[in-house]
Image (tube, rainbow over all chains, first blue to last red; front, side):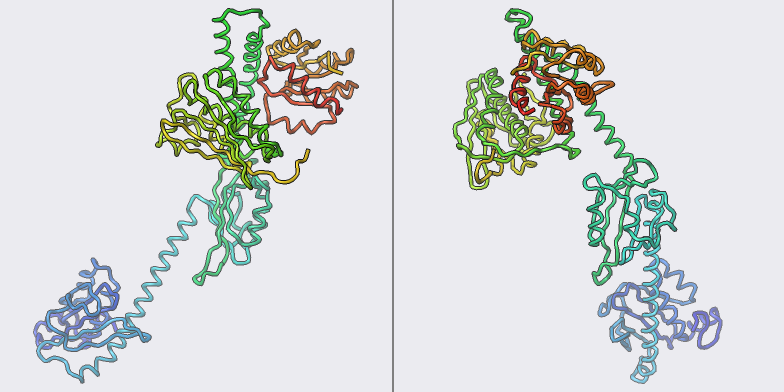
Length: 508
Length: 128
């Protein structure tokens, strides 16, 4: 069955003229596929074989290409419509003479509608045409699966090309953990050849992957269990001395949801790590370098204030105290920057000890007394809890409480009182620092614990680094506690510091 | 017993001057201030201080190396480190066999320096 021959054996050109002469013999057919986009119909009378062939082409052809198909096939009139079974809106105007279902493997795949001019079609014609309909069904199905396969192949080719050419590295293992496939970026990144990698076990390949936290331990466990993982790893046997990659692995599942292996993607982050290390080194070098001159400046100022240079005039004392206060501020800024850097790098140490909470509170109040006096603000512990103990890093706890107290003082009007309240519950101890100051504007409240943020209301000369609360929150959380606040603009703020209470007998 | 003679090892001349004043005429100690490890060794060869106060980060011999060296030569006086890197203390607080009784961070409170050192002495030196 070919498109260029016909049952009467006439060449295409001759046939066309013959068709016009035999108008009364017209047979028209339309195939409607369930889910089809295309329906072809023709008034060709002579060559049903040609009709079938053409129709199959129509169904496979793109919409815009249909006219070319029509010309090539030598078909006089082709109508194309988008339709579904039962939607006859685009079919020829009169009802079909014969309707034959097209079925394949027990499924309806379409319907063949037939017209034949004046004579019409009868039951005998139907018997003749039924095998043709069956053949047509098979052809449609073959065509559909062929097209599907071609599309599948095309999308597979596209995907694999993408995976091959993308800049991130990628490897795929089989269910037993052997590497099936690796893309160019992965091989280039690790300075390997495909031959070094394909067929090797994943554990061999990742044996030299070291993470910051625990070396290789966690990755090995994850791989063993076939679990997803992600992290940053240094390649001990990498191409470069400090070769870092970021890697993430996740199982890929087959159609039944069963894991078939791991897909691992990698990105070379050596450059980022190098810059981060430079930054870390820079921050710690600079802060050390700053602390050295600051030590002699603040030392000299404090000795002068202490009277080693003899009695000073009142203006001289005031100038000295400004200089001294600001050298302390500079020192706190350096401390904060270093803390922040350590927090970011995960290097901040917390040394937990069991301490009576009131001792820590009283010390923090005493430490802030000078500052509070300077602002004409009183700090008072109005609610105490006796000998309740907490487990905390005393230095860090002090740092947090100092920060809360100095903030409360800073935002309080002259003559105001900052209240400290301690309260013990079964599992926790809460320390509240309550001021009657300006309060925190509603729109600023979500950013209270962000870095380098400060509500603009601090009086002149009482500014801070904008780092204190960000650091405090992190410190409290590392000690197993929580830091929160409530505030109303115009009527003050209350910061609550909650830490785990220690039960049982006091130990030395 | 309370310490009288302090050996101060500090490479920064300004900090050395401030600390010498804070511990000396203000703090009531007899202070010998030197700039580096070798000078500290030379001093200890002839004298027996009651307490050694050392900067931790110094060019050449650092504070820890200096302390180890004077210990080797028989100086038993307790030591206090002064440091601008507060990461370091955990590292050398474990070196109690070197007789370190405390660490003071920079910038230190110059007025309270002598008192801080007496406090460390009273708390820890008896253990040694």
